[in-house]
Figure 1 (cartoon, rainbow, N blue to C red):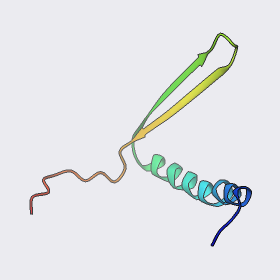
Figure 2: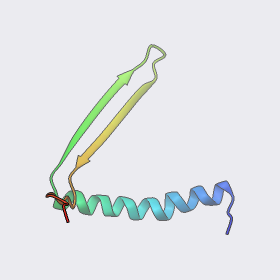
Figure 3: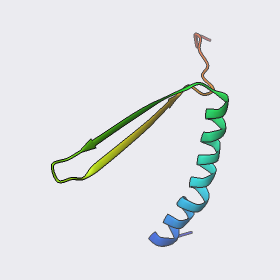
Amino acid sequence: MSVGRTKCTAIINNVIGKISFENLISDLNCHKFSLLVDESTYFTSETHLAIVVRAAVRVVTGDSHD
């Protein structure tokens, strides 16, 4: 199967992206997370905002010696 760039972008944004976003929200509602926000303005008046979410979801700890 092959699709063009426009159709591929639409599939990612409208299908895969929405499902991934819903899964992320569901995980964040059930687990602790931290949020890092950084905003910077360059001399050209461009403003950039970075948002990082760090969460430990379904973490298994212990020795893996079999």
